[in-house]
Length: 313
Length: 229
Image: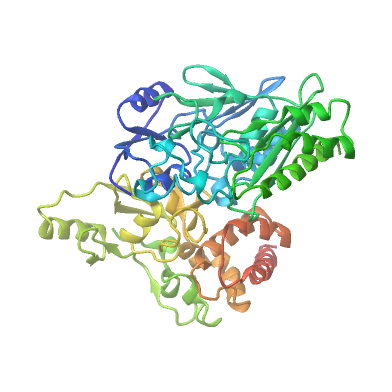
């Protein structure tokens, strides 16, 4: 890696003030950030890295009655094995337990996972060899190139890379709220292809907590080529909200996690083998696959069905 | 600084990585003819010259590299000993273990992107990838490498089980697998095959020794448990 200065923040205010200055970046678990720095994906190399792990109290999981307040620095391994999370927000525990590998899960944080940069193989090629539209170029090389892992629901802000966060579909299905140093954002509106970010955070804005409402049942399913250390081809989460309605969210099919309203409608009157299959079909009816990724529709359809049947099980 | 004591003292072979430990059961035995390493090798980050302790490395730096700024130093707690090392903000823990104190087990460069698990060390008892951890963030935390675990008499049955089942083939991934094996033994007293395979799922082996790790860890668990009671 190139040289940078490492600062240890002691408060959120200090971190966000320093983070807003010039080319600074914040580091939580580091599992996503250090890879991007080593590969020199970013056009401007950060001169300052601000450590958020030194801020006290950001790694707690608290029960607030009808919701859980999870600190952004809570480790994914701790969330996956936490009894309260497993009982009330099962989908989040399952999703946290499916991210990468055991060693990465014991380093990576929830805040880091939702702020991770989703990136396709053109975008992440070092030295800006593919100056794609997300980097300010005029074209998307994946559109005419090899797009086997890309979006099957079209383009967002010039990008067709598939979203890769595993915890995101679970958080959206559970109706979570992302709390930052400036505001509170519903998880559903938090994710978007946004230049070098994959969320709508502004410069210097830092995720501090995630508030996750309790659900009577929620599940998460992931399909990846390898069981461990792999991003999803697709992942899906379904949850009951407080009115007993089913929420279905899918990742890996669009640059941001996608709410499948058609699937939700298909299971309005209860989940059976037939309605779950119809939910999968309806959800994929509007899909617009690219030249090399129509196979993903078949997988997505099955994963939607499988997720819903597990929710009912 | 002399990094003496049981912690850093390892079998000479173990400082070369577990792969070389696995010749025969006698070479893995610290009571045998194995030469004991009592010091780490301090390496000059500029010219690569080796020094016996941090003091002579600093002296070497002043004499030979007077034009260069002396790098910052910090104390890392490695395998039970406080070790003073040169470290820069942008160095990963893997680089620091390799460049500053000459460890070669978990510290050798493999994928360097957190994708293979061969650099897995234990930080405060939890597995962490040394290639994806900044060294400056490890201040005050206990770092354990395969060298330290192999030198610990309590985990001698694990080394022996690895020898017996030949759980390393080319040896590249072995330090990471071995460190993870210790973590498994601390987490489960009697690990099942499924638990072992789940915990080792982030450690990739090109030779395909996976089933041998299961056998070795299960046998070591029995031996360690038997020794306790």
